[in-house]
Image 1 (tube, rainbow, N blue to C red):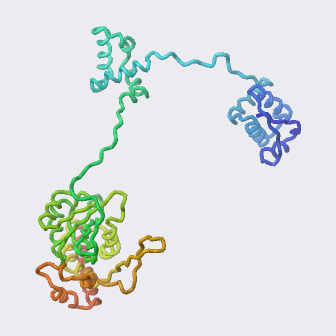
Image 2 (cartoon, rainbow, N blue to C red):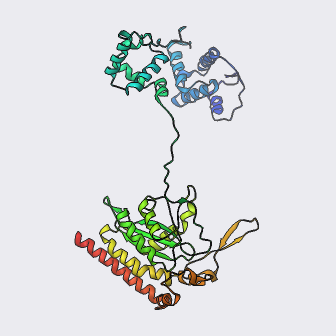
Image 3 (cartoon, rainbow, N blue to C red):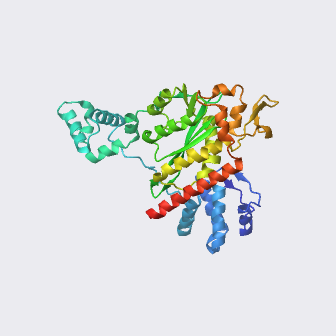
Length: 418
């Protein structure tokens, strides 16, 4: 662009343009006229006599009006100061790249050889190329026969070579035939369990114990246990013990996609216990296991915290979780149960009413034909003895005392080890 500069005679006018306050007219120009404009303006403004700040303003002005970078403007000004004029110093020969000795066909031929021989070292590859031309008289290797070892590696880094050697295939999904990928669907019946693992942190590179949380979908019956590790040797016996604690028959078992649950040992355990349905969470459906994950945050973390608990304390933690905490959760801790309804748009929504807040045990008793869900050797008369043996306040006091004793024992064990 060429600036019409008939009104630009002072630095104030130039500075006003740079600051965006001066109206200026433009018209298209070529490189020669741009250089002439720069030279003429430098002379008109007496650039050599300007101060440092004004010189910077002129440079930015010239860059904006000509489209030439500030760095190139500096070069043009340096030339103008040395010679008094600005000349296009580019020669007639614009520069030509060196002629390539090895063509794309040669590079693809090298890639073919490397693929066939398993990409040997540069020296060995050079000998292969030489033999192919000189011993076996293959004219395709005329140029490659004399290639150096170092240049073999240069060609291997070229785009042509990489495109020839690279084979793109779609990622194959790891198919695991264990468990059905589906959301839990209890249809209002107890016995549809969800399971998840809570890790009690690492410290100094040593893993803590693991808490196993199993929750019923309909009644929110919950049993918690602890293991030193999530290998099948520890996990399967604990799962069997937890499942046996539920007073009703277990009909379904749902887990996320963790390998601690999706394996043949767990599947065999469920078959042994005659649990008919084994499901796992679907991809991009974060709510499939949301109930037990919510219990992890609001129940397990509340009672066990986030601090590191060493694996050697798994035995006493498991005893507290099964014998003290789990009975309290099921018979004395009220839970919120949602009531579903459809809004005006037909969307299913949930609300939590005061009358729907109850303990998991009372929720079980309130189900239609609740007796038919109990195990053969279990009755509500027996369960009532557990549920009403003490008040909720006495029960929470007891479990808090047991929790305090548990962590005192853990702290004592830690200090003794230290």
